[in-house]
Image (cartoon, rainbow, N blue to C red; front, side):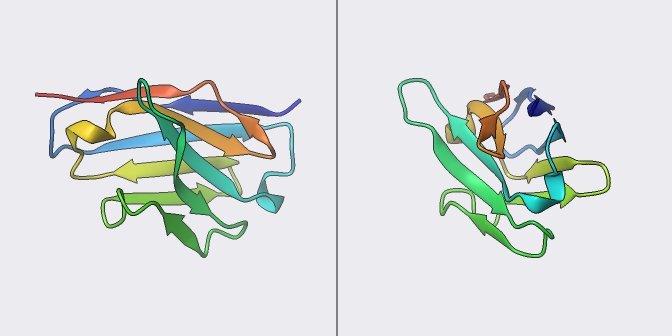
Length: 112
């Protein structure tokens, strides 16, 4: 069955950097767009980044544009989210999505 497992969440200071990773299995990974979403307490889940099947095109929410970078490795069935210049408002549970399935999420907390 489809499995998405996120990792890399942590507590980081404002201005810091963090890289999240998502390991995918159970589906033909290279045939699917992949996404990163996030959900902060009391807020709706929002899509922050998208990467196309070949990894050659990416899309970002305005709130993270210029700071976050999504990438994928189709040989290893992984998708990553590099996050730079983190802000307090980036604090959320981050989820990987693909093949209409979700991972369990990984917590990112940005605080001094």
